[in-house]
Length: 320
Image 1 (cartoon, helix red, strand yellow):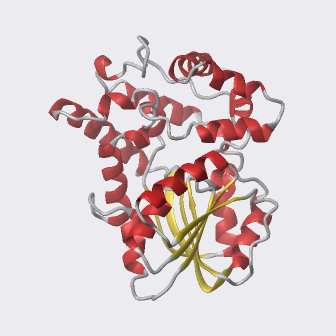
Image 2 (cartoon, rainbow, N blue to C red):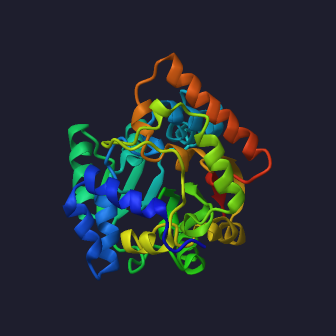
Image 3 (cartoon, one colour):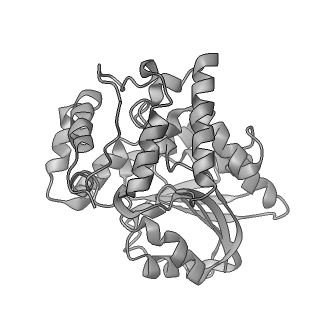
């Protein structure tokens, strides 16, 4: 367990440059909910994380759907194309980009997005309105306190939100009861170790993977620093920054398995790529042949690692 690390010092410095002092000072609130909200409200910040890279997203598509050009939203939609109407609940929807894609692909679906960030849902609603979508609605809710209707939803979706919830046994029990008999739980989630407390082996492999990138591709976002070593996150900074981050992530799959049956489950890595590409992803937004080869080199390195280790990120469909 790492309490405070060099990574934390560097991260605080970078965040002050990238997001400004207002973001840093938001972390001094005594309210855990306020600190968590400040992280979510900044979640549409571009350029610093692996999910910003289009080529990485194509890798995810391939590992989940079998095609680089088919998203999991389209993949799921095609699986349910035989049903006339689907009631989907998305919990912790944030900016709702995935839910809006589901709504565009499936005009006959009734989609409800929930989040406790009013700012993000208001932004999502504006986007949905500009696209003329009438089959999606947005509810500001604290899901710990919100009573879900029983035996109601066909699908409950978590996209990068379930790892922010605690008391999973009770919480997923409530989700289970809200699904109809043939209902499905769908997750696209980080399910690795709590608070990103990677093992010594994983830390060593992360840094070996990092060395495969030329120095020019390791320049950190909006700074003159180069990422030569990854030191790992300390628990203290994580709790101060976002108390909900990966709070029970390693328990997600065991609790799901205790309440649901696997329909399909596919890992898409992230064990090495997420920490390696953190703060240097902007170098790979637009690709030339050299950058593409560099990414493929670290993709191959992670694939070899995954031959012997469980994926930290999982797409899964489960049923009662």
